[in-house]
Length: 356
Image (cartoon, rainbow, N blue to C red):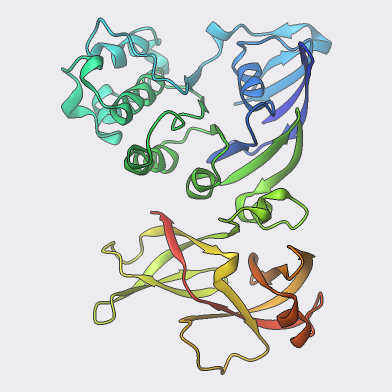
């Protein structure tokens, strides 16, 4: 997916150039007002950028040099907004059928029943929108977008209007959409928790430009980006359940750098999951033979270091083919004589499951 948009909107200038893989979920991440939604609207064709080129799903949708612009109603894209915006005068079933009936038969990839079961709304189909909770309304909005069999799904902070409990409830359904449907998704968010759980890749947008982009864990562990100053800063790793230790209420996840013990989860062996390891939960040592309460030990190499504050620093570690972060005191770094290229062992106190 190739996107280049130069679009002036009042005093704001969007000047984006990026290439994105056409699979999985790509997060557009940044603070409010940075240009994420404007970029999404340009992709959808809702806003016309005078200088642009956008190519995706095997077709050129906009090219200012060639005077090409496919209008929004001819772009087979699904869009989910911050508010569900359901049609209040018709049932949930008819809301979902609205786009389905307007999609050519030869383009229909999903049946309404399949979408309803995927998003857990089959029991809501005969209800009216005013009787739904916020999370239910958003799931119906996603179902309506999918009913058109889109070639690209655009989601503009779909969880921002929900409370924490509703967000946690809807997350597994969004994971199912990401994993079970072969539709590339572009997902706008300013929540690092959402991105860590859902994204395969991310683009960091700041003041109308892309500051960084790439695979999720590669980006969120970069020391030159402000993300590492977040309290939730750390690494997000993908793995599979390999073992359950019922006696000690633990589960073992096998991932790229090695095995990680996490609190017991009753999921089948082989189930793919994500774990988030906060930088503050990672201590460093020069030996793997220390007796500590930390259950997880991973061999690693110091890649880079950065001051976090007057008394501590952040260390980016290469572990296998991925990265970890450690937040330690400057005194500890001096005692270990840490420097780029030095071999260490990362002792991980806890690793939290953030998605399955």
